[in-house]
Length: 101
Image (cartoon, rainbow, N blue to C red; front, top):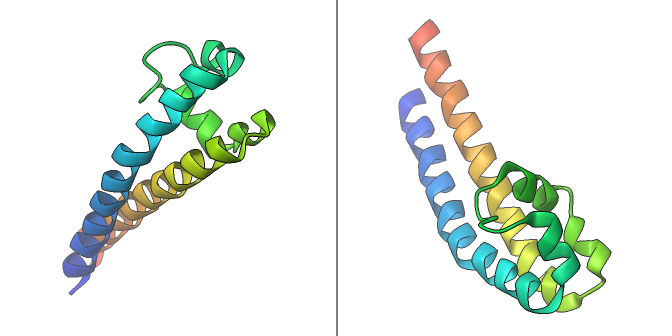
């Protein structure tokens, strides 16, 4: 049963990845087109750069005071949190199953 829930958390992470792949590129294109100073900060090819993902998790997009950017980056941030949480919980349950299973 524990491994079933671990697999369920992996499925949740995959659902988060689907949303991330939709919203994060849209947010990056918006940044590129309307916020060149933020685009310079994130650099080129920022899709999976740790600095850009940290900027997203820290809600750095709020400094731009652009509701359209917040509307794109907010769901991307939530989906990134869902991915990380789902994988972390799946890993913990897998370790639990190995230790006590």
